[in-house]
Amino acid sequence: MLKLLKIVRDAGEVTIKYPFAPAEFTPTFRGKPEYDPKRCISCAACAIACPPNALTIETDLEKGVRTWQFCAGRCIFCGRCEEVCPTRALRLSQEFELAVMRKDDLYERCTFSLCHCRQCGTPFAPQKEVDYALALTMQANGMTEEDPDQRRQFETCPQCKRKQTLGLKPRQEV
Image (cartoon, rainbow, N blue to C red; front, side, top):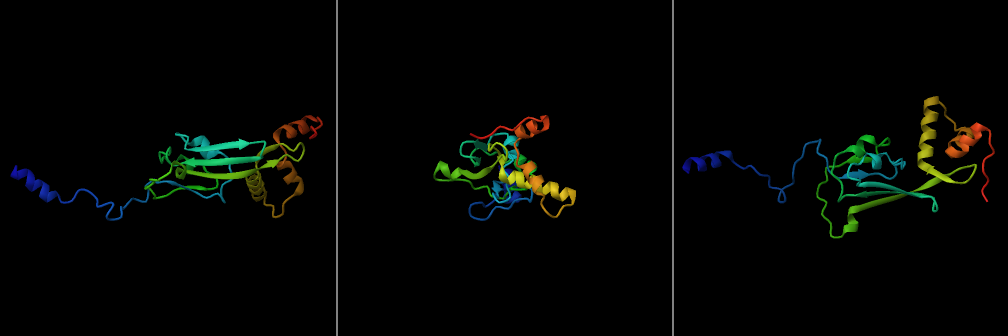
């Protein structure tokens, strides 16, 4: 028995003093994802990659909006959302204390407007995503000024593009 007490005494403290002292983490610690709606283009890559469906995207064509939603209660902090985000709108933070008083406080939402097709008026993609794709194309081609014909091409829905390619008349909004 005395031998065991001597081992325990020599081992020293083996636990951290966490709530009374700040916890220390490695730089690779994965905490709650931080979301920057200004950088987000609502491409849904994060929602597709999220294993527990903590990130969801809902598109309402009647209102012409796409809603991004994050539920911290479902998140497993795997980091897939951070890996696939093309604009780095999601970053894993060091925050791990996620207790809340109301369940609604676990949710974070953001709404984006959809781009309407120039031919038929149907909403088809988030406006920020269309602008992002246009900016990437301009950068890749070394263009400094935006071409109105190119913007028109980007703001046309896939169905109308298909009809233009086949030489059919685009449908008219009634």
